[in-house]
Length: 350
Ligand SMILES: Cc1ncc(COP(=O)(O)O)c(C=O)c1O
Image 1 (cartoon, rainbow, N blue to C red):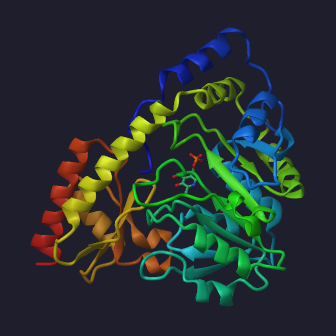
Image 2 (cartoon, rainbow, N blue to C red):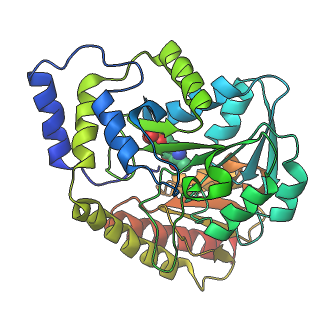
């Protein structure tokens, strides 16, 4: 799973405990604590000429509820949503839930966007959704790619949902650019963010969203309809997370960087296994040459006590792949990868 194995930093836990003790145990503002929204607004990636205020931010029940609220607020029957795939499977599920139509566009062989295929698919689309850095591929979409997307969407009404949950996890040699920093995208971008991955806070359930004001208002309405206000003490904890010194997150990023090297070195050169080096996030999207559905590979690896996700889960082009998460201890990775390499080498790609 995409579940950091690090503990949540203790100042975050202390802030939640302090909030509970001082009686911050009642409903919060429906859009999120104003002081948290103001702090988030002041830290949003910005393009010159665009500043953000607390009114531009909605605090949500994780990025999951930000994505769900954006799709349920903006998409209905007859709306087409372009999803470059393989992609985080929640996107297509949400579009289906909203009654929209999923238009999967396969990625290029290097797992970056196929801009020609996107040029063909985007006209008339209500929305495009992606994660950057990407789950499950570990790709970081470069500034030129984002600019090219902006150009393709020029003069259209298509909204772009940029899920930047892994923005702090970018490996040497790769540069992360937020969609909000790209002038041609910023006014059509619904920016989704979460505390889950950066701060090892998956169980706290705090995310947030910003975007065009009309979208933010519609999202806030949808979110409060089925979530109500977010847990008050948890929002105080989130404020404390924003105040953590950079070195706390940097130390975790450094460990992910080492694990990424370990995973890449371990599987590269193994006949029949192919891994595009992860550029960001904590996933490797491993292609295998065996003629076996990825669901079956997952089952057989589970019988050997190795847990991976099937590539098919992330879209039709994901078949023939499995997703490895390296948000796991070095020891677990060493054991798991050794078993995985043995499984493929001895049994499936002899
Ligand atoms: C790309 C992406 N977006 C969103 C989420 C969900 O984040 P949250 O825990 O904030 O709901 C995940 C979790 O794996 C993810 O990989």
